[in-house]
Length: 242
Image (cartoon, rainbow, N blue to C red):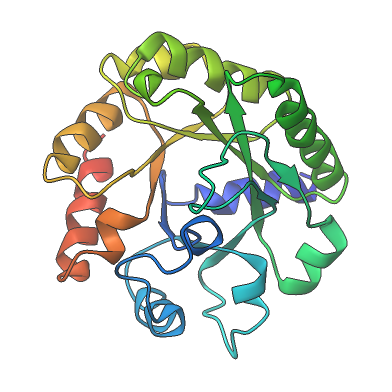
């Protein structure tokens, strides 16, 4: 077993991967619920999550981090909420820097469907192979450029397959109906992106888990939740029953 396989085994050691996503500030600035990012990290790392997703600038300022939790670092960026430019993502953090920060895995954005999405996909594929040279797993966050495609099982299946074909070890993407179509056609594990805070979150989560999704990266539905302990207990129950 090589280093990449060992790290992937650790990521899914409980059968599913539950990640607290707290990387929204890179695009949004100050998201509601993440005004004090340090305080949130201190709280969430004590709860029942497998790992936390952060931007490298925040990681570099953490005084200590629970070694029992996976540290997943975002290594691509796009524009900002001020411009609305989400399309052409850039790969900016190299493997040596991520290793110095303590990364167990990294996440790379792949926005598909805009003009010249080949640039974004080139950045994704370069990051995948750069990181795998060091045995570091890469999660590809595959999203359609057009928001009307977020709920299309066909589109989500296609872009998930693209990410896997380019070498990603895990795919993170949107929840849709008929999620079995997405999972069956993707040769690597799929975890769902939590999306905007939604009172129907658990209905969609249960459907995705039944269809074979291997976990979730949950941002706003978690950091905008008051009772995070109970919320995560319910998330665990969804995947434990599969």
